[in-house]
Length: 109
Image (cartoon, rainbow, N blue to C red; front, top):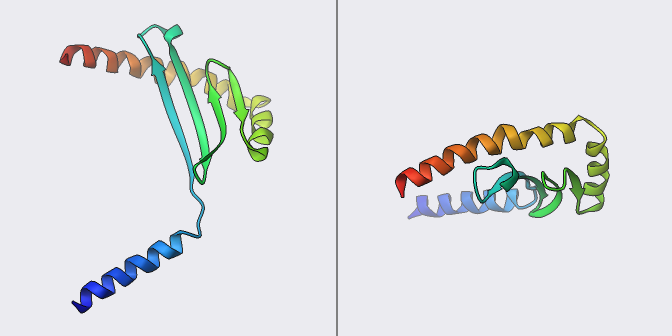
């Protein structure tokens, strides 16, 4: 019983300690209706504490900021090599993987 209390106390302390930190995450999404490159969209989004701060959508072709910090970085990234790299990611990442996923899904259905 005493070991259970010690374990619970350690978990509680770890939870309280990590609650003071920040959460930064990035997601990549490929939206598609078919395997044609025109029907595929590449979306790259950055979040800080679950709030979307900036994203790139291949249909728009540039970064868009949603917060003051995001707008500042979107302007900077749209003028640098980041926007060219993100534009190329649709072909490299989405078109390739959508073709594989589409064939696999049809084969199993």
